[in-house]
Amino acid sequence: QVQLVESGGGLVQAGGSLRLSCAPSERTFKIYTLGWFRQAPGQERDLVTSINWSGSNTYYADSVKGRFIISRDNAKNTVYLQMNSLKPEDTAVYYCAARRGTGWSPMPFSADYWGQGTQVTVSS
Image (cartoon, rainbow, N blue to C red):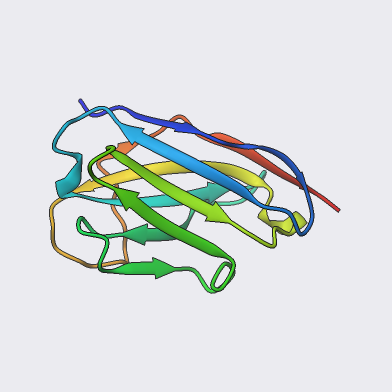
């Protein structure tokens, strides 16, 4: 069973930045497609961004294009989400997700594993 441990959430003012990290427990993490989802109160959990095993392919939801950057460091077994120019509507619980396999198909993202979530709150 792969465990995904997120960190980096918190409270930030609108226009600020945060960086989330996710560290899967499995050493074969590099063969997984990784993604970040978010879920606001009363809303569905939506895919925000994803990255393939090598980092050569990425996907971004329209709402975060140009503001968020996903990256991964396979040597450090970590995936990052750099969030810039944050808006109050970015407030949500952010979840790291992993999907087995090296094939690239950004949507739909059917996760095999989930992290426990980290709260991001953007104040106006």
